[in-house]
Image 1 (cartoon, rainbow, N blue to C red):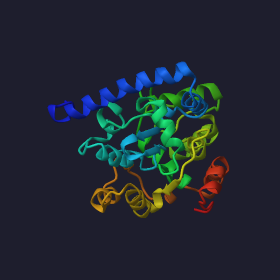
Image 2: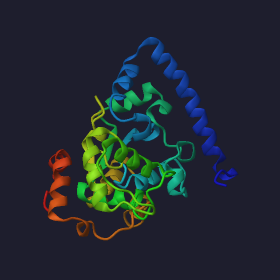
Image 3: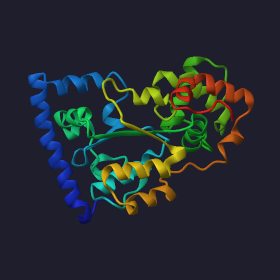
Length: 281
């Protein structure tokens, strides 16, 4: 069982912080404060409670994009909170990691950090070709297309509703080619953040980031994060060589034909252009 006496102080601090935040949020909503209005505007994008992490003690906001070293980054943030040995699963559970969402940090606290000229507000992006292979390998590879898995069910619902004519035989698994076609068809629909457009995940209204790193330069770029936070290299170096939740697959280039790459480029063109990734394989 994960919860032990060793993590009790962290759990108590987390619950106490959440209780104080709820009171402050009630006051913000009651007074229709700028913080409440700012948070309401954010909700027109992806779920801010799921994709925005806040560390008030470190004047930090992180916008999480799945399959972009997000679990590894959460391990670092959790470590800043004093938690050092969490599994990949518990790192995505706030009551274990202690990483706050905007509402749990308190809307006024979150708004202050979002507007502060000295705060660090960051995220990481990734080559769309590589990210799509990673999403398929993590969520679909070698899984039978049968109900019971939430990601498989998203695909099954899509095939039913779209009438794409795909025949699914018992025991079938989803090939990368078929997944890529599905992802391209739904990338702009906010169906699932694991294959949604990255620029869409980053564009929370009014929330301006001041550092966007790249997974391909993770060592260099995350060292910059450590320097901004005044954290020694001993806290950053292990992340570069020990990624959490790394998907298992061949080099991503092996999965693409010229036609498939062209289809993916068209669907994710805004990501390629905004984050300066080449269209060529």
